[in-house]
Length: 260
Image 1 (tube, rainbow, N blue to C red):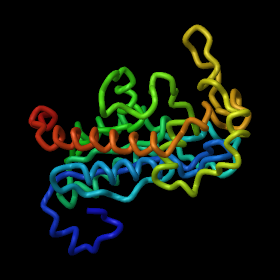
Image 2: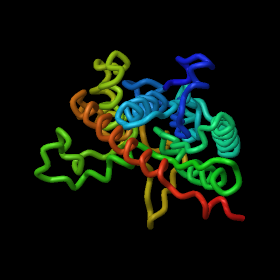
Image 3: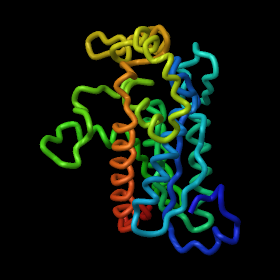
Image 4: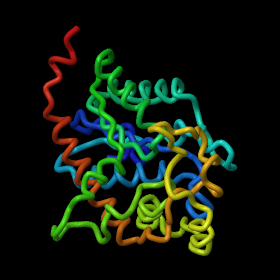
C-alpha cells in the first residue's frame, strides 16, 4: 500500500508491521539525466519490491533531498547536512512506527546517503521503538557481477560496467521507469565530458571532495551503455532483493536489540 495514494482509513486497515521508506537526492546527473534520478530510482525499486513481496507492506513517500553537497557546483542540486538528514529519516521512521509499522527498510538511491543511513538506522534500532535497516539498490545488484551462465543473468556483463554517476547503471534504470526523462540527444556530450571514475585517488585516499574537481559535466562513466533492457533487469533484480530482505526483517528476533 502506498501511503501517498491512500486514505487514512485505508492505512488504518493495513495489517502489517513492515514499511519501505525510499530516500534519494535531488542533484546533477550529467547533462542527460534528471536531477531527481536518485529519488526516482529509489521509489521505483521500493514499489517493485513491495509488488514482489509475498505479504503486505506499506510504502512511504520518498525523501527527495539528501546528503549531496559534493554536487553543489551544478545548478539545481539540493542538499542538507548529515545531521539534518539523519534527523529527518529518524523522525519519519518514528512516525511510521507510531502507526504500528515499526520494521522499516530504508530503500536508498544515493551514495552520499549510505554512511548516515547506516548510522541512523543503528540509532533507531538501539534507542527507538522501531527496527530499521538501510538497503542501497545499486550496492545490492553489484553482488551479482560474478554471475556466469545463469539464465537470469543481466543482459550485459556487469563486471564491465562501473556504477559511476549518471553512468550506464543509473541511466538504464531511469530509462526503464521514466524513459522520457533521459535526453538522448545529449548522451554523446555526456560521455565526452564524463570522468572515468569517481574522485582523484592517491595512496588509497580520495583527494577530491566535489564532483566538479574531476568531472567536466558531472557524469562519471559512459551513459550510452544504459539500455532500457538493462534497466528492467536492474529493477527486477533489486525488487527480488528487497522482497528477500523484507522476509528477513519480518522474521528477525529483536529481543537482543530491545535489551538495555
